[in-house]
Structures are given as structure tokens and as C-alpha cells.
Length: 298
Image 1: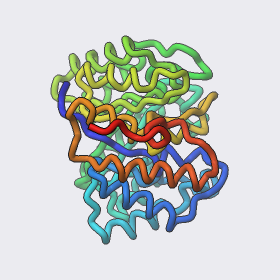
Image 2: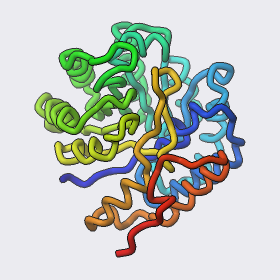
Image 3: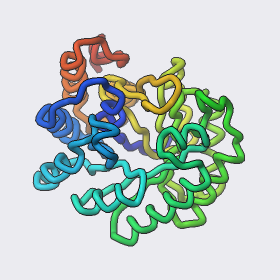
């Protein structure tokens, strides 16, 4: 398997579906600790309207504060439209993430646009971000299925990928928004993206809705994905899908990689500490395993 990057999305995908808003100083503590642990990228938040998603209302402030600290990890932010890009550029986001849902229903619930319109606008917005000198990652959301529409035609997913590649956007995330993926499907999709462009940088964003999360992550890595998006404690879930469920836990994936002698540069105890603090903050058990069971010592 190729060297794997860890993209921590807990501060965004992990918190966006929570009923209560996490105070900014608490978010900063979690982000700083994860960013210092050795993971490669941390997604700080999304540039959406605060009245629509109050959990993300402090995203601009978080970036302004963190930009002055020069964290070890690259900071990323999610942008849904042109206005979001303006805000992201204003606060200096280094890595801008954008996406199009392969499910027309999910796309309308999430962005107010159908898939075709969203694809045109997102590609234009991504190119504007590149023109501004920022790193860009584009995603296909609901790539492996949709809670509203069920199976998504493979040709639709690959059509979005091909449009990205034709536009020169080669950092591509395949997102299992509804958690419908299974390992053989994940392997096939990653391989097909790389067949379209062997130089593409493929990320897998996997939810564990039906218990196949870690198997799907390993399927993606075995097929050539270069990065995995995970969340502290396994927290998360898209509030605009039918059944929201958490991501694969960052500390669980890092623990598994380190058991095989990989990514030993990451401070696993630090990640476990963050996951435990997140669980304590919300006063409930999180789906991740290693922060509860403790790691297997080498």
C-alpha cells in the first residue's frame, strides 16, 4: 500500500450534526492537540451560514486565530459555494475542500442545488481557488449510495470524477456520505479513478453507518488511495442525509496502521486523549473503539 495521509475532519464533520454548539475555546483546544499529534491535515470547519448551521458559525474566527500559530498540520476548510470561497480566501485557508453529491436529492437538501448545477458551480469555484494560489480538493459525495435514492449509478459517479479531472482538479475524495459502501465497491471505484488518471490523489471519506467502515478504509488503501478522512472518537454524520452516523475514528485507524509499523510518527496517546475529552464533553459514549479499550502496546 502507498504511504497514507490522515485528514482529521472531526472539527467539521464530527461537530456539524451535534445539537449543541461547542464553545470556540474548546474547539481550539481539540484542533491544536490533533494538529500537533502528527496527523497531516485538520479540517477546521465549513464556510456556511451560521443561522443555518450554528455549529460552524465560528469557522472564520477559528482560522484567524490558528493562522497566527502556524500549526504543524495543514488546515482545511469546506466551501459550498462562491460566497464560502470568498470567506475562505479572506481568512487564508491553505487547503480548500469542495464537493458535489452524486445524489440529486442529497445535493438539493445539502446545497439547494441539483447535481448538474452544483457540479458546474463547484468546478468554477475550485478553479478560482486554484487561481488564488490555494490547494484544492474536490469530492464526490454519496458516491457509494444514498439514503434517499438508494444505489447511485457508477457511471454518474465516474462522470463527476471525469469532469473534475478534465478541469485539472486531481485531488479527489470519494465520500461514503450515507455509509452504504462495501469493500469490493470501494476498491473498484478507487481503481477506476486511478485508471482515468494515474496521477490522481484519491482520498476516501468513509462513514461507519452499517459497520463496514474500517473494512472500507482498508479496501481504499489497498486500491491506491493516498489519504483517509477520519474523525476523533468516530464522531460525525451529515445532517442532510437520511441516517447520519459517525466516521471511522482517527485513533482507531492510526492504531491499526501502527500495529503494522506504519505512521509511527503520529502521537497515538494524544489522539486518544482528544477522543476521550470529546466524549466527556458530550457526556456520552462515542463509536470509536481504541479510546475506550486502550491501545495494544507494541
